[in-house]
Length: 253
Length: 253
Image (cartoon, rainbow over all chains, first blue to last red; front, side, top):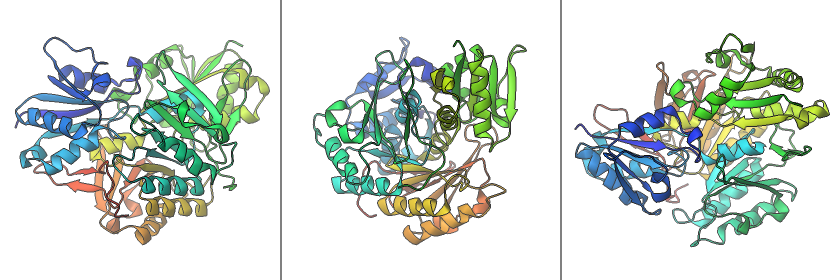
């Protein structure tokens, strides 16, 4: 079988944050599969074919990409950020495991990228400087009580948290419920960072105390970082505050 | 004040995984501070000065870099991977908060990079495809009982885990104790990935069941990913197995 499939991370959005490795893979591929806004970032040649699809169609997109690769094409499946974090790499593996056996013998590679929480953290300071976790707030793929249990466990154990997929039109309430759960376990002064389009011209970074955090401060493209009890804010003159989590732990949790 | 300080992530090691943004900042800087092996990766010009230091010297390194920036230099502090994940961005913030007030008004930026767990995950498949956490196993900066509590909480709540700083000459026992704790809460078949030098010519990726995981399978440059009860292995002909965590959660935790 001569075809191959590469799952590529495009980084948070700025062309300056795509790795040379990802650019090389993109230049060598014939067919591109991905969520519309991500494939639209690509500057494809006339001989490269684009197969854009809607979000929530990850498995059918992965299957279509694997089918074409099995026919001999050089296929690229693109994700924003890193493809291994709440993105297409897992969907491709799921499709490979349940699909035709020949898919499992394809040449499949994953090319990492800068995931959203790293880009948002960099713009805020160093909020992920201590132990942290990443949670998708979408309950399309897991029950809400699993999410609620993880939020509680993470807060009680002192993890900083990054939230992906915080809200959508179909899920307007999850983020507010998540903040309510966290307010039961964390003091109101804990910083919450709402980061959108980090590193892009339309970037928005907003920091509020947990006591004032509200779901309407986010949309589906926002990555949210919730500090721990030890996360600190450095106020600066004529510059945005820096938010950081010290490397050491004082044991106040 | 005209000086500035930029904390730059060099990615996991391959030059193909450094972002163009990081390369631009490196080209524009006059002075470089970092742990020896990281600054040695840089291909500096004759007019650029290198200030390498040992690890465990993060705060004095950050203070020296801030001092030079305050004198007007264009200073780069380099980290492997992403500077915000168990690396220099938090150390620079700590030094800024406790140091001379003029340091807080410096132009300070953080440039994100591909952190080790993303590079290791990409080489293994998609083990971070579901909710996960990142824990430094070093007890230099926090008590071991805090680490033990977090391991237990993460296992019980169904998080995949990535371990940074798993062992060192001064800390040979932590990783074995961590596996012992996890074996109390997770079945022995859970996959454990030991990843070293991901993306580099000397790359080593090894996957073993938790029941067989041992601390001597890692050194200080290894990043370890421990799956959840739902993490799966796809066996393939003539190719390494793929390890992935499905996006959905079946509730077996």
